[in-house]
Amino acid sequence: MNAFAINLSLSALAGLLLGLFYFGGLWLTVRKIPGSGNPGILILGSFVVRLLVTLSGMYLVMDGKWERLVACLAGFLVLRIVLTRILGPASGESRLSA
Image (tube, rainbow, N blue to C red; front, side):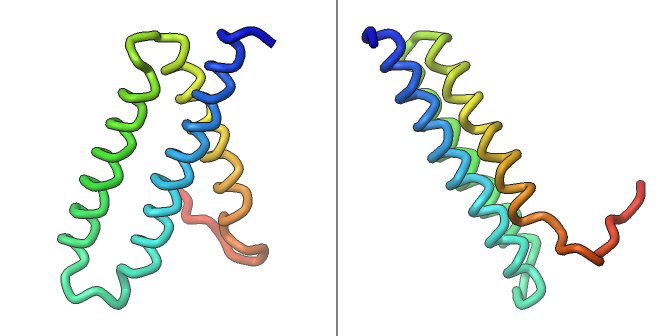
């Protein structure tokens, strides 16, 4: 395995970890909203922290190479799909229609 493939694999792994932070933090935030005294500040604060950490992490992983950014983003999106399936609504719950 060459260095390019190793770098892309590590970038994808970093994307998985960043996705776990971002979407795990979102899941925790949504669960805390009902008990929050001021849900607006909770939602906004959580969004800003999650966004800053995630974008900073992707910038560091990228290191000026677009291929690493794409691999990181792919890992991020894969984790989003996995968490959506795992933490989605339980069977029997209906989804809201738009």
